[in-house]
Length: 314
Image (cartoon, rainbow, N blue to C red; front, side):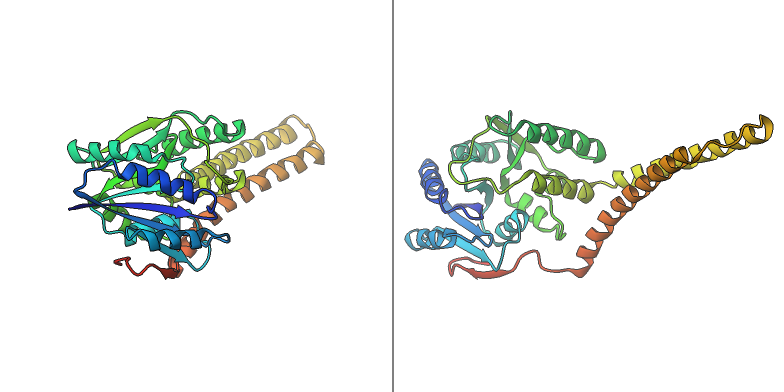
């Protein structure tokens, strides 16, 4: 029998989990009986009743398995843990808030099974329901990062992906500590089919992604897959060196040839502040890359498991 592994990362999703589970099981029943399923919930250090709900589901359904972290390690760690511990011939990732509709699963499986696709990804065709500012900066981010990288990251792409085992193995082989899944999925390549759908609001609970967290996540993606910011800081530095040299020549010419005394200190202070700001900006960029290197060199585990279900193979 073929097996499909369904991986769900959870952080404080006690309100959404029962609704999600019912919807998932309803759609699983539409698959051929020759396909077996394993449903892996990854509890990312939830502080509410999420883990108890998952344990209850596992006790009622042998297909349900779980991994529970010792603390909150973040969604990227949860995705990696699920991929590392699943055993399916096909693997898919979903969010527990039903923004990733399980109703697409059968269509995604059909594309991978019957057509020449290694994976099927999903993307939102709009951002209806999101704050306008967040939508604007999301579009700007994708335009920027696609100019900085040698491969395309699809605007509106979700982590909701249906993959063959060879794609999963390729992603698992990327052991980096600083993970950005959308970039990793694009980096490994393969033949990907994209399915578009309208944006769906959370079924329950509140989003864990504030504007600040999304900004940090965007910076993570840029520094993980591009050295363009370093090149930019070098270009800015070179530009101001040339400008400074030309200004020195102009001042010497005005003073010695034209007899025009050098202007007062206000203009000098403005220039010092501007150049100092650019230097600090460039140092900040360098610091970001150094910090990522520092974290990689320490080789800390991506996640730590506190407990997991007995029927989990790995």
